[in-house]
Image (cartoon, rainbow, N blue to C red; front, side, top):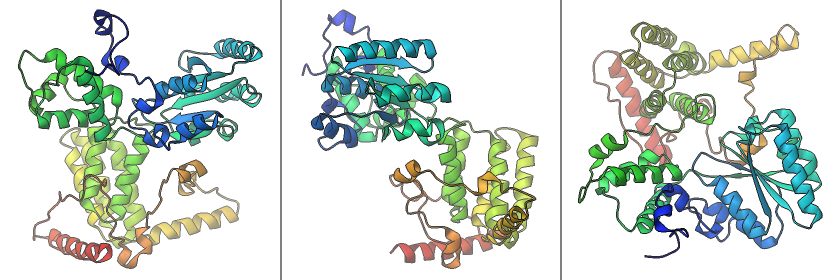
Length: 436
């Protein structure tokens, strides 16, 4: 067995440490899942080679290696490493860190200051970093799981480069499991389907996949091999990474809305179930479906608003899980309804007129201007607005690339659904023609 990931301390002490801690990479080259940053041509690799580091913001989900990379970066650049967390630190703690960094700089050594959860500092606290960044006292590396455009001061962002950490893909998580098996000298007691299921449960989180692997090893008896069902019983089920007030929330509701607008009931139903499964408030989804009925269907099918309102009220009356089917019904209805933005366009025109007359200000939500950072990250890139396409249908695929297209809704040739089936067949024909 290779000693690349073997513990330095005695085996009995090493085995007491969590697997994720024992397998921390010792060099940037060992980091997995972030090749765009730490690979041979990665952004951080190039910075190290140039001999010049600037302040940075590491943006990405939990378990992607932000803390580890910051520590390794300081070592490879020959910098002193200081770490604080915005959750546990205040102004007094910052002053102490800055004073230590100034003293260290006087002796000829610069400090890399790693600030975990930097978005939790208030605006004034964020501003306190500016002088020590500008005079070279510290090289700031802030870590955040939240969108820097919304959570960090513009002044701080203008002095730091934002580097995005990606969720681990299946290959990266598989590599972490292989390293874990190498370090422990034994294979995971999982069959092929269970191993794939464990990787899916980790949801792109490298720390989570190693923690789940530890749980499996603890539970296994001698010569026992778990299948996928037994795995779920042992580790239960790890909820998807989803913060109802942050990016996960907005990304999924955006995907649901655009799938409805694009007349794709299967993708819309998929994202609706993703949100319900993640614990989203069903009444919030109901309110958004009402909005979609108004914005993207309008008077092309006045029943859409009636049905969405009825579904919201039905959920309020029945509760969960029975009422969720009403939301699914409304979701499929608005996705298969004819589309028109005539009412939406008329409303925006009326609001512009109201503003010109000085009686009203336009509501913020209809401005919806993305930041430069979000544009640089590719948000919205390549999206075609269905209302601008022939037949108000672009034929885009709204499912995740790796998942491929799926069919969940198959309307029978009865009642109004006979007309829905004809629409779906027509859209399928257009989709094939426009994607051929």
